[in-house]
Amino acid sequence: MSFQLAVCSEMVFQDMPILDRVRRIDDLGFAVEIWSWHDKDLAALAATGAVFTSMTGYLHGDLIDPATCGEVVRTAELSIKAAETLGVTRLNLHTAELVDGQAARARQRSTGRMWLTAARTLERLGELGAAAGVTFCVENLNTIVDHPGVPLARAKDTLALVEGVGHPNVKMMLDLYHAQIGEGNLIELVHRCSDAIGEVQVADVPGRCEPGTGEINYAAIAAALRDIGYTGTVGMEAWAAGAGTAGSEAALAAFRAAFT
Image (cartoon, rainbow, N blue to C red; front, side, top):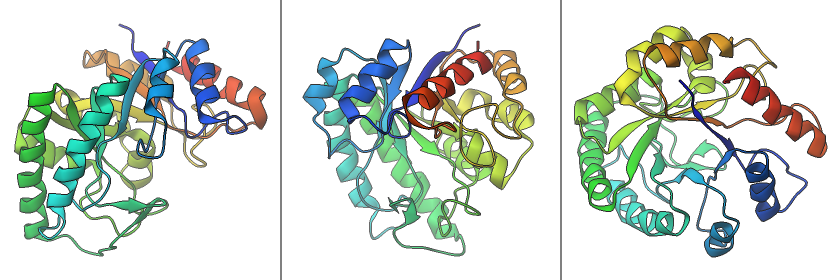
């Protein structure tokens, strides 16, 4: 079994403008992921001819908050329109809005109301996704290093939400970097998530650089994904350990080697 390998253009070839990054990733034989879309020239990105696999699926609001979940849905509709330009079929969500990587409205505990609001909002998003032919993927995050104050962020929480909603257009963005920091036991996690996975994202721990720079055995992760019959996208959402263009090219080569 083979995977579609994608690379986050926000984190590599950072000495290049975004269009040149996308072209370089495409030239090296990878699909492309982006984060934000509202600050980019989508027509120019589409004109590169690259294959885009995922991007941010909302702009504002908290999935878990009755006061702002409507804003998630409203801006998700805008994201769907933007996705049409790039041919993106997976739109990424977080349980709470992030601003420069931090929780826009930090919370230190989860409540039943948060669970219920998130589930109901995901049901609405699932229906939007079904009508547009896109899948909304809820990304698990770590709250220890990168994203403190985000409730319902662990993989076990995002999995529970996705399974509870039970909509084919609502899946997990299973981020194994975040899961290793927050929970560990990654091979068992892969098997547990199985049918709930919409896409897998990877980086090594510590440092959030390419596979092979830290403690995660990504060859074993690749084997586990094959064991469950996963043939979807694996995206490298990681910094390059080395500097400059050469460092980024080496990072992409290491990523390919880990999953080929």
